[in-house]
Length: 79
Image (cartoon, rainbow, N blue to C red; front, side, top):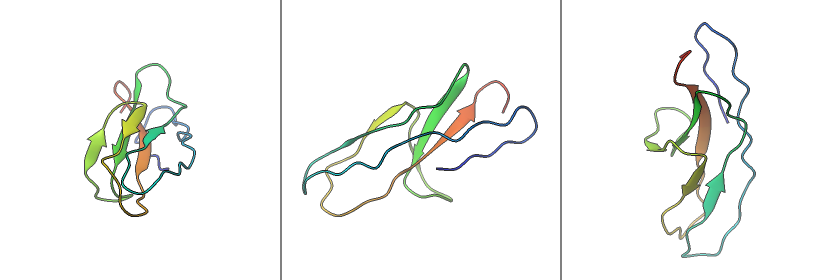
């Protein structure tokens, strides 16, 4: 989990529990903690990753190996 706040009110980091699944299946990851105009952003890397989804839940592609995903909260109004 990570957070970036430039000016404005600090944003609490999201909560997203670890999830285990079987080989060659998809899993659904779910984050919580956003409020008001805040949205979740799921990435495939902690830094410089590709934005995968902007929803509370994210369904992975079919996974054949252990894979990490990263979620943050972005405030669409306050930056």
